[in-house]
Amino acid sequence: MRKITIAIDGYSSCGKSTLAKALAAKLGYNYVDSGAMYRVVTLYCLRQGIIKDAVFMREEVVKALDRIALSFQYNASTKASDTYLNGENVEKEIRQMEVSKNVSHISVLKEVREMMASIQREMGKDKGVVMDGRDIGTNIFPDAELKVFMTADTDIRTRRRMDELTAKGNTVTFEEVKKNLLSRDYEDSHRTENPLRKADDAVVLDNSDLSREEQLDFVLKLVYDLKLLDQEVKDPKAV
Ligand code: C5P
Image (cartoon, rainbow, N blue to C red; front, side, top):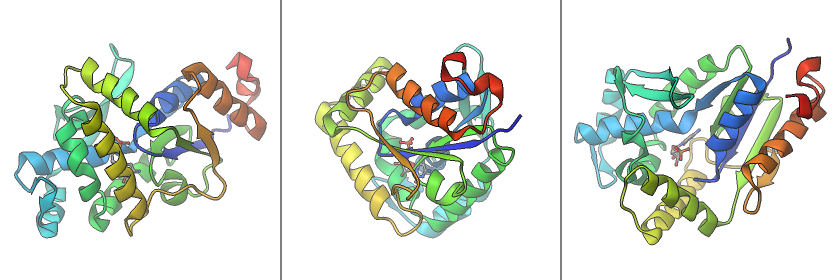
């Protein structure tokens, strides 16, 4: 069976992972959350006191990379992969605001990006993967058969992120979440190393007014239009 690589990039809290997970499940592909990897490095640095309030010494972070073992394990109850740091399940911790506030400062570092890139390329080397992030279509898999660039209205993104965080028991304000999204978007788009930008051949998906089903249908149609897959996944209605 001909498998393809699907890269989903875009702004913070656009619903990239929700769409990527649903798409991977439909196609029987692996889903890789590349942002979780940067979050793991950030969590480790926070725990070790290497970064505090976005202040850190570059050499300390670089040295710490050798002490970080990152892995993913399937969780049957959530039907998704959990993220592990040195054997500990940190899926919940990496989503906390403290990590969100610091992650874009860690992800600018070339050494961090190189380590993440090599893990990501290894995970996607056999194709049959849906990977979401900021530089997947431009840097990690520039030859991906399908690239989607997601965006949505800022207030809608803020509301979605807030709902997610409060459902997990976090106490956050709308303004705090919005400020974090905007500052991460700015940092991620203006850094020197692999900034967030739309790949020239990416299809833009603004999901401000689209339901999850509509988004999935939109991307499945793109997959179908590629005419690269085997018969059983050629018709989106049959996927
Ligand atoms: O996708 P998520 O919001 O979890 O990503 C967290 C952060 O990780 C982003 O704000 C960005 O700084 C960084 N990131 C990145 N490149 C990727 C994925 C995430 O720089 N491919």
